Length: 425
Image (cartoon, rainbow, N blue to C red):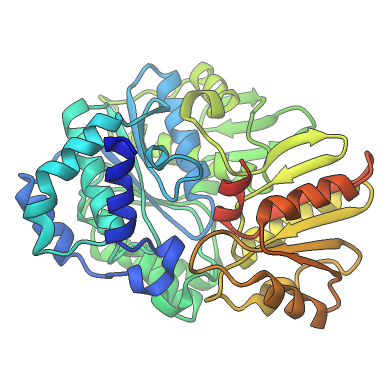
């Protein structure tokens, strides 16, 4: 095992990661990350952040923003989570993943100093990213929150602008049982006198964001006030204030038009608020939207693996995300539907399973993480709701069985867990 592999192995073993191990990994307050930033000399101060929270679409929207900024000639850092194949996906500049040597050196240099603080995996990773961006000085940094907002490690920054994509039900045991409570937690990224864009207008929670923005004297803009996006067979038709663009895109997921709307509204407000920093042009919008994957190393969302059979992988794992993927699949209406499905043990699987069609063939499986729901138990829960299929302890066996069973005219969908997608990519 090389030095880089040893470093990652230490991080994963010493520092529980929420996506793998669940609630034991969580430390929801800012005291430790503030101490870490102090020890590092507060490298987060004065860096040019675009801070993004929300239940769905954070990653995709952030990648669209980064791609358009890159098309505009800027160096753009990105901090996202989780990763799929390589830990370094979490930290990148213009799609190039962080150097292995920087990770090794950062852990070696700070292991002893951080020991008394006992940081979480996420806090270690965020501190690493901030040190990297400080060293590399990108023009902008797209910063995605982890689970929440108010008590999220990333919330120590003072961004140029904040963006909240939408609010849905996920992680209720930490963020609250109602949309209002969840909105309050996500709205915690709204900062004094910094503009905030709300990607999706939701009547029952608008007042939460409006009240927070008012308290902070922050300009609040809803994305649909500035940007309209409609979908044609080959492109997105986009209208902004005084400009129009028809742009093809390599992003095809069910929320893509909403994510494009949120991203462009954020960039429009960024331009209006800081005209000396950034100018949004039709050419750069078109180029950026058409090349998100190439510009930013964007993977894991609505990935079309093959045509015959049609194979789609998507990392949707909460109610809103899975519902949108299933609706999109239903619209495609291509042959018999085969679904390879996994989830985690601390989620209410019955609510998720109720969304799925009884006419599909199911391949219940589990990712190789401690938090995974056992495949046989998942299959039994599905059977109680009329979902017929077999269980597979090994995700690759489930996937290969689905591919062998499907006819050329059929559809195979893999979803339910980020770690399931990661194992199959």
